Amino acid sequence: MERLDLDLSRPPPLPGTVEECHRVIEALWRALGEFQQIQARVEELEEQLALGSDNSSQPPSQDSPKKRAERKGKRPTGRKKGAQVGHPRHERALVPAEAVDEVRHYFPHGRCECGGSVAVRGFRPHQVFDLPEIRYRVVEHRVYEGRCGWCGQKHQGRLPDEVPRGQMGPGLVAWIGLMTGRYHLSLREVEALLEEQWGLRFSLGAISQSQIPLQAWLGPVYNQIGEAVRKALIAHADETRHYRGRSIYWLWALTTDQMAYFLTHYSRGKGAAGELLGDFQGILVTDRHGAYNDHPQDSHQYCWAHLIRNLERIAGRKGQAGEDGERLLRAARLTVHCGKLWQQSHYPSDRYRRRLERLKALFRRELEQAAQRHGDNKTGRSCRKLLDDFPRFWTFPDHPGVPMTNNTAERALRPYVIWRKTRFFSQSHRGDCFRPMILSLVETCKRLKIGVYQTLRTICAQGMAEGEVTFRLPLPEPQPLPVASPAG
Image: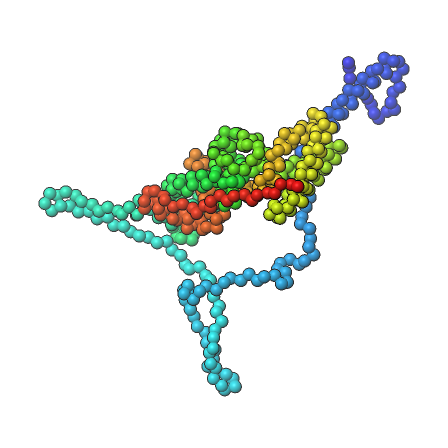
């Protein structure tokens, strides 16, 4: 059938015969089909333009200026900025007298203006903290040699085992590891800071080579963290992109409130997830990434924050899909609110358990109705996928103490994401191995409130002196989860 071109600037032509009427109807029918396709494409593009950090996995840093302007800010409290009247004061505690480096005395005049003598009865301490002028320390080790006066055999002294064979001592190697792994400085910035702060000049190659022995010394502590995380009762897992040059790899994280274990892998599939989890038998909290789905369903909790973002996307659609999305979103937010109240009550409350059971039934019913109503379109497919994943959203009521979100893993990955944005990528397999090791140590020390530099210095000193690192972190033993009372 040939296409009928319509000139909409003129009055509509009136067909004179039945054949002409059929031609007009056929052309209008084709135009209606094209219009529906264009309308569906426009809706799809509008939905993509509306995507942001509030309704997808897109990070907030990639939001458009419009989305940033539309972000919901905190509700104003009506109070002025800064400290509020009656707030507890936070002051630096005075250093004990035995820890003071220097004491200077300032006495009042011995005689008052009235002619009387002034008797000193006490003093008011005023401590000033300052940084000393720092300089590197050089120790020259002289190895002497001699020759036997009878036979002429040559004899030479030997360096003690604790003396480094290179030019960098344990403090310097630990400091370089701290600057790169904790504060994410590039090697050039480390080179500049060494010269500016310490007056030391080392080449980029020497600074990079210092990480080779450090990587080997970190191995035992890195393995200790991995074994301890896999024995935890609750762990959070997540992953993000890791680049080596132009190649895309993945950085995986398995974390708890006290530990963080990282792993680089070329894949984002189930094989990499299995290598990360190892023999982990506890309760796993993740987003909806399918690579973790080999973990048993009854001990796998999906993140409700990711679910709400997905429902925000459905709620932003037009027509019946948006209305169904709004109802699902309302049920999800009520569930999160009730779950938080239940957790804050330390789990003995039957009232919150009964509410959660009712919300669970409501949420399933809404999903089933929406899936049936929308058939095989994208809203229907999304609802059916949520029904398939439904048990993994409701692990937390059966295992009190399990969080409803995966924030622990996402917070652990955030320093690396910033490092990735500001310091480019790794350039070798050695860099791929070093980054997860130093990140695991740094993030675990932060959670345990242990000084990262002193830990690194201890590890480097042992590695240089003994060749084997026996230092281990004081990792906590797994604690039992609280017991929930059954819903009455």
